[in-house]
Image (tube, rainbow, N blue to C red):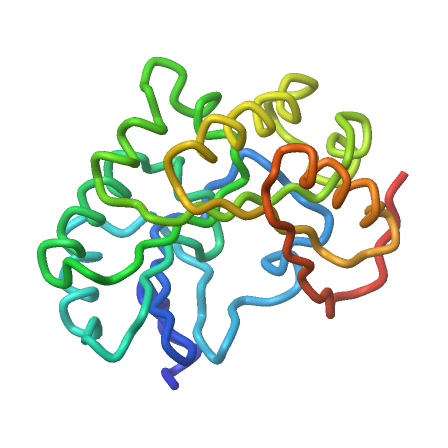
Length: 211
């Protein structure tokens, strides 16, 4: 456990080590934990600014040991806002621990965030093993209401396309948050059609009003 008054770049739970490399995100999801908490697991994840790459590496080297089974890019923002940093840090992780699993938690909009880059190829070359994509809707209309993407109507189709291609190169799963506004059965059907597993996350925040 750490002092919740300190910003955490690196945090952990059980055998997973998490990297909080940015608070920037292209979405403004109504259920997002950062809307009602400053952090999780006793760590403060709200950052005043994005940490420099070398600062992330220093923190990583301080805490990463063989006791961890995976390193996860997640935190209070969208990691693919900093694609180059994700790739550079991934290479460093694989240099230190070649057999450790690296997971990326993403909203799946990396190709829209980085339009001039082959994001999936870059992630593969960097050593990413597992990608977890926040689905949270079964159609574009619901996605717009629940996730409020800055890229607008094209976002949901971009997410599905990213998942479809990534499924050829990585271990993939979708996640959804269990709120009444999300049709779990419809999301499951969509995931099944793409042959992607679906994980349901518990929601413990305030009551939501989605217009």
